[in-house]
Length: 249
Ligand SMILES: C[S@@+](CC[C@H](N)C(=O)[O-])C[C@H]1O[C@@H](n2cnc3c(N)ncnc32)[C@H](O)[C@@H]1O
Image (cartoon, rainbow, N blue to C red; front, top):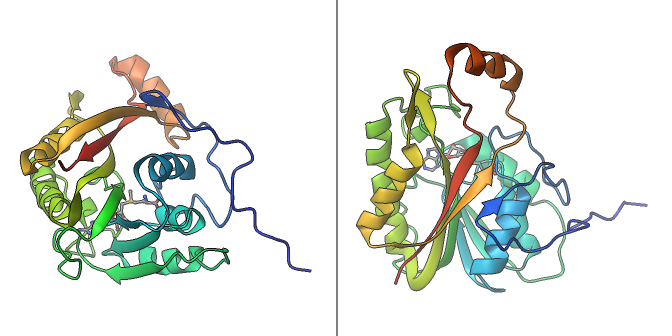
């Protein structure tokens, strides 16, 4: 007999503070951690439950391995999933191969988040997305021209994220929210506040900042080597990301 898929975590409580930490990534439904740097399903579930309602139309314009799509389907939200990477779209389609007892629909589209002309103005009720952090993780090894994870120069990356912010502002309905998870980096031993620079571009489009949530990072693969480096060269390891929740008012 086919084993029934578990669609919900055993324990789940909505986060109520501005610091979120999920030391063990959930593996209910078809969630897996094999798309590098993917976000935890707990982050997605918290966002969907707080900022949308059933039958709303959601958008993740950088869907990666499909974490957001899985949660939207389980929680009865329609979702448009976008990515420039064929492998990401294939994985997302595969991750959605499970049954639910609701009417949620999923649309998967290969597209650049800077120009999603197939989405009408103000069509979307809630956006949640997780861009690359410049080229910290490369998703296509320089092969895809549209892939923002091929951009090394931080100012150029922020400039391209401004185009994403503009497009997200266009497709989102008034009064609705847009959540973006992004981390910082270090160059030449100095801290680079990439997340704040990207946040600034969203504010420039007209979004207001509703929340700045600090997301604790876990399972950083290079931790052993970098712990020693941090002591030798006297710098701190970055172990947090910013989860910004913007509102279009
Ligand atoms: C951090 S990953 C997203 C991971 C996802 N949240 C998950 O849980 O699997 C960033 C994604 O952005 C995609 N990407 C990069 N540039 C893009 C662009 N211009 N338009 C759309 N997607 C893009 C990459 O292909 C990658 O899948």
